[in-house]
Length: 366
Image (cartoon, rainbow, N blue to C red; front, side, top):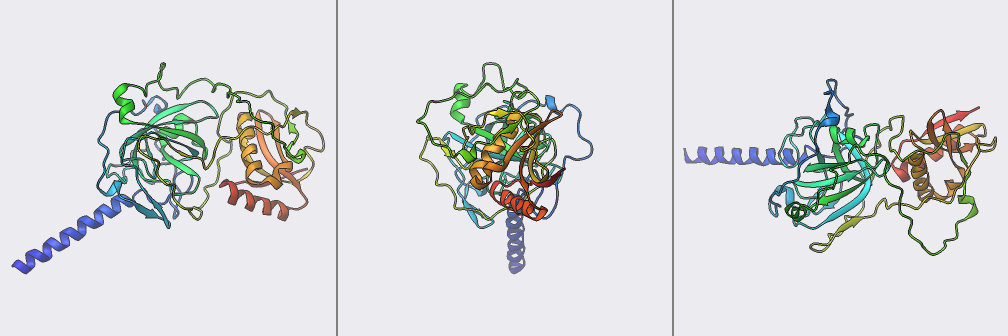
């Protein structure tokens, strides 16, 4: 009987250990815009009609765990991560994605069920739980979400948003740059996290960026590309008109070293860029030459196309002279070209996909 009791206890311990491992892996490696590497995700079939009125997460002081599974160092896809276990400020900029029905009701890394219609998010190192303000710099929208899961495990991605949070930021058509800032327990205790007019998730266009004087920098003339413009530039907005195709996870790099106590940890994988000196010019036959072009993205607002153009020019300087923004029928398309053949354009697609983690496509102008 004693041996049987010991065996039963051993089996129970193994089952509990397996359950904990599975709970921690429920938010395992996800590709872009939802979905795991083995399948696609999506918004679901019965979407509530009033998700735009779902309130932001209300920050409240929650204990910061210094022990337990969510606080221990872990490794995903060969890359190690060290969770934060103190109340330090944290700011980060990079690409945001979202996840939906494939994970709905599944256990998150914190053990809570994932609710795609709540205001939550996944992050690789922030404490579980914690709160962050997420801002879409292209349209000025902001939301506050509660971080209760781990991910996204793709280089350049900084946060995986719930479906509703992505909806309120206008990020459902793909992935896009965001800025995130942690709301610490100290911020909550003092009320420093509050905005005078509340969270501006439905705010008007973002204010114009403040220009800081800097020493003159010589820019190669090849980088100054004419821009086709047939519609007036409008306030910044983010998302491409056409959805982006998810990109598989790339080989991870070395983890960031944690900052000291009470000092902001700033990740600069995708630091903001000053716009290239490219004055707007009327469309000319040369700028819309026939042939094969690579389309990087299509945007409702011109600033979205210009932002991606700046990023592409930095990531692939040799391609910078070929980047053009075509404004047609209220849509602003960022394209590179022309290329002499479809194969040559395909090589540029591969370079852009590997460098920028986007999904460009080849188009033909006649």
